[in-house]
Length: 151
Image 1 (spheres, rainbow, N blue to C red):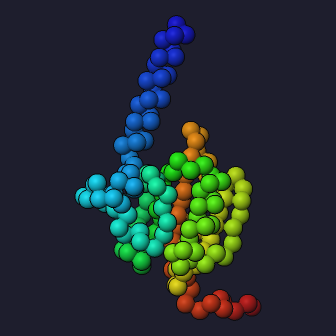
Image 2: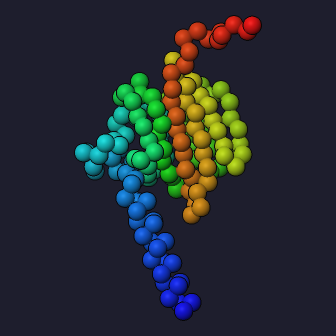
Image 3: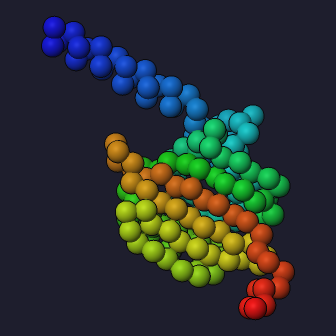
């Protein structure tokens, strides 16, 4: 009885992993032109660094606009662990013209950058099976940098 339960659990876990894989797209493959028809083409993300081999979660990503004016949320996983991903973005974002505003290292780490009239917030979480999950959100900044008047 225990063996059968173990096998059934194994099948259920395998099915869950396969289902999760079906909802992602390999960002590295689209970047190198291997999958020209994929909607997750990295050609639209010319203003941010993406770790090699990153896999986009199509269901959770929402991108509006294109090239260097896009806004929205890009969600992907990477084989880099959370600490490596944190270091990767901290090191690579300035090379794309982003200026660091703040960083928080914790169980869920967050980096915030600005570039021209946009702000980027990068949330990094460790994943159960290794690697990291990245929620990369880009939004427009306010036109007036002083903010609302205090009353």
